[in-house]
Length: 77
Length: 77
Length: 133
Length: 133
Image (cartoon, rainbow over all chains, first blue to last red; front, side, top):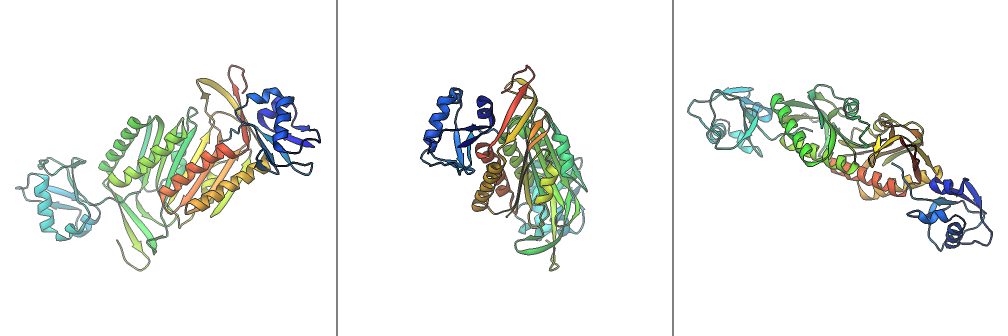
C-alpha cells in the first residue's frame, strides 16, 4: 500500500512516496507506524492523514484502493 | 460675508455661494439663519458648518476672513 | 507610514496597488467601491460625485493620522473618484499594506467606514425612472 | 455565487479583480499576500511553495461552500501561487464581491484565515544565512 508524503514529511522520509505494510488497516495504525519508522515526525506540531483527499480521523479504515497522504502542518498563504 | 454650499444644500439654495448678513457672528446664528432662509434644509438628517475646512461647533465665532461652508450629510465612498 | 491621497476623475486599483507594494509587508488589503446598477430595488443610471476638495483632502489626511496612531501600517492609499460614474465604475479605492494581515483588514475597514462619515464628498443618484436624489 | 479557484506558478491581482467585477456589487475586498523580505527578524532570500494539488483545490471549494452558506457573496476568487517566490512576489490573492462592504470584509478575512489552516500547501523558507526551514 503506497502513501504520499508532502512538505516536511517528504523531507524527513527523503522520498515523496513510501510503501507501508499490508497489516496497517486504519489511520491510527498508520500514524503509529509512521512515528516509529520516522521518529523526526514526532517533533511536528501536527500530523494529519488524508484519505481520498479528505482529512481522516484515527478510526478511518484504509486499503490499497485509497489515495492516502501524510499532511504535515500546512503553511500556505 | 460669503458662505459656500455643497451637495443638496447647493441644490436647495440654487447657487454654490450665498451672502449672509454681517450680524451673524457664530455658527449657531448661521444655522438659524439658514434654516429660516431655506426651510427645506430642516428636512436634512444633519447640517454641519465647516470653518476654514474644519467641522465647527455651534459656539464657534465666524468672520468675513473665514472660509465658511455648509456641509449636508456626506455620501462619498 | 507612507500615504497617497487623491481625488480625481478616474482612479484605478492598479495605482493604489503599486503605491502600497513594499517587500517588508506581507499583507495587503484593498477595498474597491464600485457603482451598483441598483440601490434599494431601483435601477441606477449613473451617479455624480462632487466634493469640497480642500476640506476632503484635509479630512482624508486626518483619517490617515488616526490609522498611524492605531495600527502598524506601512502604506495607505486613499483614492476617490469625482464626476459622472456609471454602474461598474470605480468610486473609491482604499489600499493598506502591513506586515500582518489582521491589521491590514482592520485598518482598511476603518478607513472606508470613516471616509463615508466624515469626508465632504456627495453623490447624486440618477435613477432609470427619472428621479434624481 | 461564482467561484474562481486556481493554483499555478504566476498569479495576479488583476485576474482576481476581473473575475469579481459585477455591476450588482458595490463592495469588493481583496487580500493580497506577498513574500516578505524578512520573517522573525531574519532576512528571507526566497520561499518555495508546493501543494497537494487535487486536495488543495477540493479544500478551497469547501471554503467557498462555507462562504456561500454564511454570507450573501456574489463572487469569490481564490488564487494561490506555487514554486519559487521572491520578496515582493504574490503568493495568494483572495477577492470577494458583495453588495455590502461589511460582508465582503468578513468573508475575505474568513477565506484567508481558513485557507491558512486547512488547505494543503506548504512553504519552505530559504534564509540569507543559509538555513532552510
